[in-house]
Length: 338
Image (cartoon, rainbow, N blue to C red):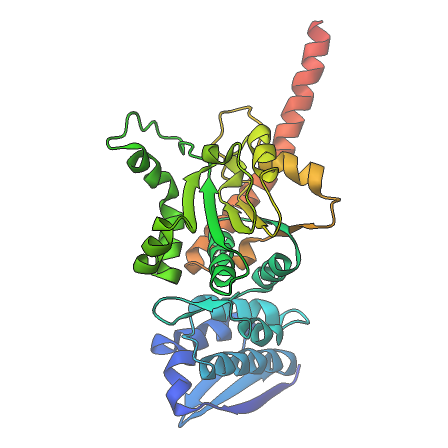
């Protein structure tokens, strides 16, 4: 195996951003691709096998370009660029970065960061109803909120309606103090957080008082017809089949619906059927309904979250064959007893 070397120029103003604190990003690329990287005087020398040097050069060039576009390079960016380097789509990280949905109140651009998120956003643009299904940290709700707020600002819809089932996540909360809104707010807090970050508290309150933005529990949707609205149902895995049917049949003319959920985090009573599971089976053949499945590779929170999600996925996949075997043995035993 021949060893080659190549040199990449690093603009001085981007060096700290792309190399990381104490060259932590360089070290990660070195470990992953088994190359040696030496940074000196605004240049980076890469030494290793021809294939791996080319991958490292591609990864680093992409990170420099992202930095030039004003991005603050994170460990997640480095991890994702590395994962794409092993596929045919390593240059797509730059295409993804071009798709700016909107900007937060502080001016930070909101955009997809992975191929899965890009497909999710594209589905939302094309389809009337989109199901975003995936683990925690994949940006399902946040991107949906960004798309809704942008459509509202552009006059594409006249109001935004955000809802989620008010179900306890394993804890018995008892009688919460305050009026009805105070009791409901803790369940809806994640939606408020995204609204405040993207739209700003003052703008949200102004539109909320006018009834143009509504945050409400799913139970409040019954009996309504929602025309010309952007409707987001969050935590859909905690709906019953009846609730899901009720929600989906509220849709009126000029409306767009996004349903988000994580099939691995159901808080329904044991043995209860999830409305999200049922909807995926029943609606999969309808053209105007899109399903986007995000995975652990689309997690954009702290890199440790991605590892946690992957560890749980691996555990569940190992557990299922054992459960099936146990059930089969139990079934045979029952027949013998008969």
